[in-house]
Length: 207
Image (cartoon, rainbow, N blue to C red; front, side, top):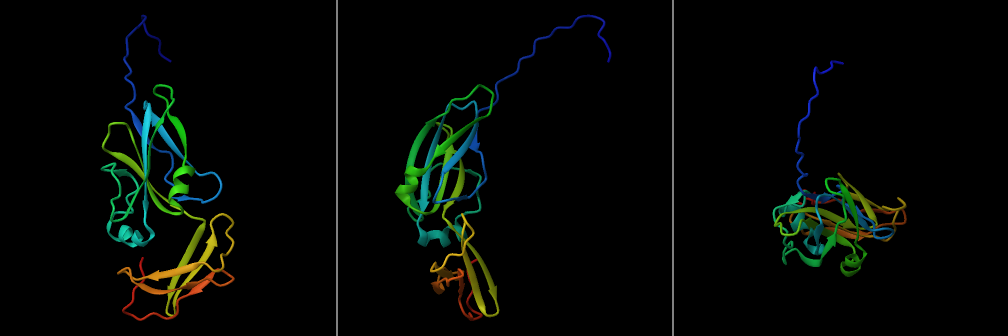
């Protein structure tokens, strides 16, 4: 509660915040039904360049085992995932209307490129115009959820709806080894449950 003995005046220069652009959420799953939107957060950015790549289903093991699928953050390049894994589905630029030095949230609808690629795993990148680096998110477009357990008598998988949590009968299930070879396959029963039967010790399911 001290009081100055005399009036004090000074000029303080506050610089603008550095431009920043990223996804608003760390989410990975995106429903096939309902609203399919992605939110971006930015500061002092006038536009965002987005790109979408789809991973072919038969290349999922290659991606998970060797290609750094767990890296959900910044990508060191904004190029495609490569022809060996999949291909580019869409590229577009979004204008961002924001107040200087204030965080802006921009919602992006993704129905158009989802209808082009169908359900599956996608890699979505966003970057500032002119930058070679990008922020990335892996998005799994599905309405199915799976819980799998391995025991002495083999592997059991329970398939449910991610929207209603109801069991899914007649869902096709494939069990892969760590070498991407098919160990067993079949369909779920009326309760959404599938059993592989006993596996040999030399066989190892994928993680």
